[in-house]
Length: 531
Image 1: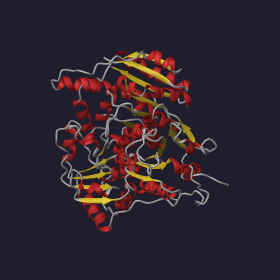
Image 2: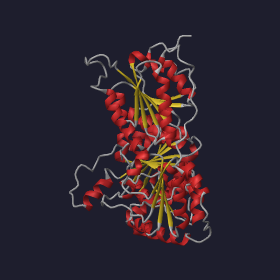
Image 3: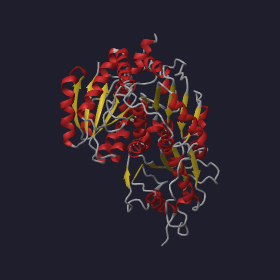
Image 4: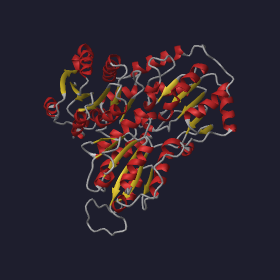
């Protein structure tokens, strides 16, 4: 039976166990959709391609599988670029499949024409391919998934010219997925040196980054064996058991946590690039200064990162930790590091501003009311506070856009992607009134997908965190006070249940309201009038 490349693409995605794609169809991608309606793959339509990318990001975070997007030529790729950059900063696996005008033709002012779309996409993506001939597609797909599985992941771009979409693919081999790729393991010499350092250390600390999520159980076991406190970065915060006595749920950018790390005689850092948004959020120009440092990272380029390592182990976090732990001889279980962790946690929380402490208390109400909820955040005041100090619930998911690329408008579409990926968990989108106005239209996706997401809108009538920063730095605030819409009417327009609470009401009422709206199993908006 004749099959074109667009139809073959859908069969190939099925072979890679893709169950969901996010995208907005257009005349330039119609051939990619030819086989989709009859496929078991679910299609989710955002209101903007940026939303498709954020949905794919949220989906990938909760499933561990790449989020897949289909976008049109030109503006489709341009619109999704922000989401791709957010995914690149967070090392999130995302596959963007874009149409493109035929590159053999000179620019003629055609629909969706860009001067050099592939060059634009290649600057944004971690890896990119253009499909010149049908036989190029299986190899490009295999290479993209090799990156997702065995290297530092990020957004991958596969660009398919319009003429290639319609090309006959009948002669291609049956769509199939190659054997999964494995990340390399470090050499024996490095493992032996790291094991000797860990055995000799009397006061070690473990740092876990976003690349350590799959290794959280191994890290916890190692921490208990060595009596080594764990300091997770924001991306890894929810990977560790709530209230574990060895976990410091605070940002290593805080002076107390920095001093705590620097007092250790050895730091083992797993899957963290030592980026300033985790280690120097206030842009002081200083970082932690470990006396000795062992690093485990899948990306060999991290060897030359901002902090020099005494031993650098290139490999998958979980596989490397397993072989490293097998080489250890020391077991300090029960030696009682918990008291020191309790003291640093109390001191760190006590050092925060009154506003941050209040916002953290709100997050704790969310966590205690719905402990298995996935908490997806935007760049908003609640999230800034939680990123400084907050122990999430037992869902294993606390992620937001206030790190890395740091865009607004992330939380709502990312929450929808997360709900599609993990329908068994409640999902709460934490977003400010400013951020929600970036992405209001994605409320329609909640209705389209019957997704019972709770959207908590922190309405401080503007860009409150930026205004505070201006005031703290003697900058006269300008451009930060906004007129928000009537969110009750917005919710009504989209057929979404609505509740309004004042910030002063939260301690007494928020828990009950959360339980009530969660029990309805329908989308809901809770507006909090802040200040």
